[in-house]
Image (cartoon, helix red, strand yellow):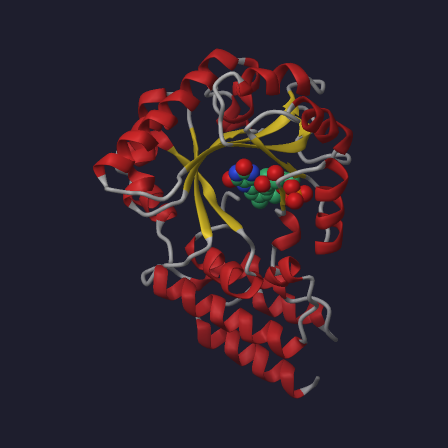
Length: 305
Ligand SMILES: Cc1cc2nc3c(=O)[nH]c(=O)nc-3n(C[C@H](O)[C@H](O)[C@H](O)COP(=O)(O)O)c2cc1C
């Protein structure tokens, strides 16, 4: 998730939540290949046995090819292509959800990533399986799941994840899981695996959805903000919550030593809930610039719990 699933967030999610699979933020293939440092930092990662997927967005198949090589060099387990982002800046360039209305380019991109993975495996002597996956939506203005997903299946990606909203819905309304059902039926005899996504609030619901729609998995986005415990179906104690906040801040400074901790404020706001006076603590956390600022606030709060 853009602005969220950076290296420290992925570390915390992995260690605390232990999900099966974790994705990077979406990374511009053009920015990556043109060597923009801020974009290259988006692919920083920790060592882990958990499946780590590099997600890319863009329009040029050649940049996707080269970016796939970069992902393999960095040890990622798969390359995901974003075909779902509804943001204006992405859509107007023909990337993200705009690929839903341009299936021929979408398919060229998938084939380029496949080639990148094949060549990258040879180049870097990689034996493990590396997946190519798509993260998309149900359609442009209206759901067109059958037609759109059929197009993608022609080039046989390993996984398709559907966020059960159209481009036009952005993040509004409810995810329409009946569309995931339509895709599941379509893909019943396909080698391509299907993941569902949209509005999952907890682990029980995730497992129910997987069973109901016969899915290979589901992705959880907003439910994991400030809540790495969601993957374990656990409610943390306030002490655990505070410990993870500090650990997350430490990891942030380890990965980005010259950054200001103020960038972490949104995460702190997401964590600081479900304990007495949480809203006051949240307000204070919105002013922090250093780990010491965070520690002082949490230490003072703990004394009153
Ligand atoms: C702040 C934010 C950033 C996001 N960034 C990405 C992204 O980089 N790539 C992507 O595929 N989806 C991105 N999404 C969409 C989510 O991955 C997910 O599809 C959507 O939020 C619905 O799932 P959820 O209800 O579990 O959050 C983002 C969503 C939010 C709220």
